[in-house]
Amino acid sequence: MRSIKEIRAGLARGQFHQELSRIYGDQAPRAAGRFLALLDGFCAFYGASEDREVCLLSTPGRTEIGGNHTDHQLGRTLAASVDIDTIACAAPTGGSTIRIKSEHHRLAEIDLLNLSPAAGEMGHSPSLVRGVAARMTELGYAVGGLDAYTTTEVLRGSGLSSSATFEVMTATIINHLFCGSALTASQLAEVAQYAENAYFGKPCGLMDQMACATGGVISLYFSGGAPVVERLPFDLSGAGYAMCIVDSGVSHAGLKAEYAAIPEEMAAVARFFGQQVLSRVSPQQFYQNLAAARQACGDRAVLRAHHFYIDDACARQECDAIASGDMDAFLEAVNRSGRSSYMYLQNVSTCRDPRDQGLAVLLAYAEELLHGRGACRVHGGGFAGTIQVFLPKDLCQSFVSAMEGLTGKGSCHLLSFREAGTGRVIS
Image (cartoon, rainbow, N blue to C red; front, side, top):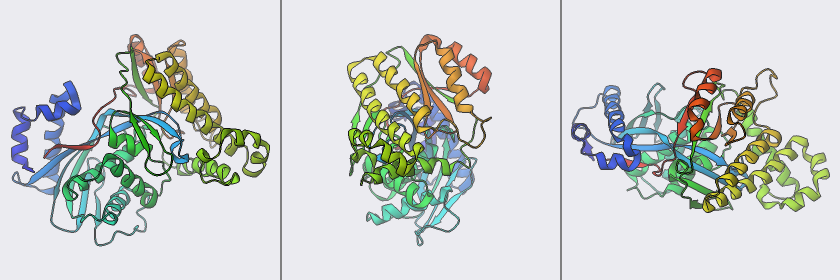
């Protein structure tokens, strides 16, 4: 590793331009400024001297393109990393305490001598750090104490997976400092998912973590065991389109029960057929026994299972369309996925307050502004957060201007896909 002083000097004179360009492209100079500010934050919080040796790392946020809530049923998804990320400055301490300070958030601190789930920690960032450290210790690695400082451009509650980005970053730091970078992207994703499931208390699938760890546009098939991962070359801009994530401003806070109900209800339908997940139940078997499934599981559970079969197919169709360069077929599949999420998965709004349907309003307005072109859908887990819009580049300016008139300035984010996954940038 290099000293803080050496890294500062290198960033200032452009020594690391190649490393930064590999990840950030023509935004490398801006990234250098972000890393300089990151070093300032690390030094200020930990009182570090300029001689302390550190490493700098980056983990991208992610966007889900197809397969809304299909991963936890071992179905297919299509996802991509995006060009906003969490960056970290980290260094070993030689002790038994992991401390990770995220800018604007409280310190996450855990003792490596106690890696059991801690009372009162569930649902908070220290549980994720503890879960990652516990799993990597179980895998046989001698995890040690460290100090890390992070800053992020990944918006919380945006469907861009700020939590998965943090988990994967934590695993990446430990992997680099204590494991000789031996863990693959898939293994880092699985460690992160374990932390979220077992320690944080959220029954998520693996898609978010895989997209953050792997980079690029990836097709994921969760058939059991290791997921089947296929990278897909997708030049969205070259096809004449842009991707816009629109923030509704509606918080995910207090929605844990709504999110948990989706995999629970899908699994209930699968168990009715003697299986653990819906991918083990054929569509023919499901529809031939629809009446009995309704009676046993209830209508909403059956509708959510119906969505699984639709969106599992949509994810395949999107991959095929990308592979063949058929943009119209891709957009049609995205719209079909969005309609299924809205009508059958029912994760656009909750039943709590019929006056509060922010995502539904955004989707309605987006369709009006697109004039039959492009595509839009709920983004991420749903119920709050964001929508995803694929729009012709000639509509970008008018779309953003009109949409932000409704949702507020800065609520629209035009993002690109990022090829680089999680990893070390400078060490």
